[in-house]
Length: 154
Length: 154
DNA sequence: CACAACTAAGTTGCGCACAATCAAAAGCGG
DNA sequence: CCGCTTTTGATTGTGCGCAACTTAGTTGTG
Image (cartoon, rainbow over all chains, first blue to last red; front, side):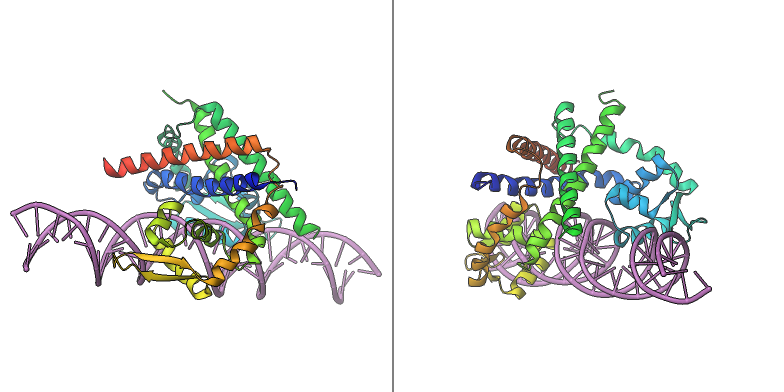
């Protein structure tokens, strides 16, 4: 046996801790993002657009690990709100380029205050946060790689 | 300034890493839980019931950080599937006690294999997993405490 | 060129999450 | 005992997240 009971319990506990932590942090962001009339996933999309400029739906999906089933209706809502616009690419009529409107660009300044206001409630010091981020990234990449492998070579 | 730019970026990165990791692990569990016809949140409910025995909806909510808006329809689906039953408490007609059916109890054996099959794709050693779990728990408790404080003393 | 294989988005359906609201039951002060 | 507050769970409405499917455009191959 490669894993005895304790390790299995630990795995379960890490999964649940992740599930709980992710929702708790989304809740922490919520009141701040409510002022901008944004949800956390919408905020993530805008972060990508603020950083990269015009981006295809496909690239957004790769950056955020989301598929078109999630992004399409979400982008539609953001477009209705007037913060983004969508346009078919000239070079490839299949892909859709998402870009910020002036209003979306202006949101950036208000949004800049969000992380500052959300910080300070972590009760973890920077070195712990760094280790946490790196562990999570390692974990996620390994899991996604395994899933891709399982789908590719069943 | 108590937080300079780097720390704010780090906070954003930790939030996103959490968001991504939580979904990745749910996806890792999905094919295993599909065989039991369970979702991950449903599996969590059953874990509580297997460990504690009959439990009120309120206690489930406290154990999983979920409210009745999430639990009520979920428990209804689990009841329709025949793995749990709900019964008004005799001592307090407001509260509903959730208990396993025989079928729900039998699921426990199959479910025991789930963590084992999900493990081994973490690419983190036990000490890192332990640190990860503890950091996440500390973080979540601090965030939830702050949110409770904000709601209690606005 | 024809045509199959592939790719990018969108659509549909379902199950969470969560805010807001409601009704029933219990507890409580007077 | 009686109204008032609190507690418990259910309901409603919105927005993800994701599987499965559809549509339209592109690419590769004979």
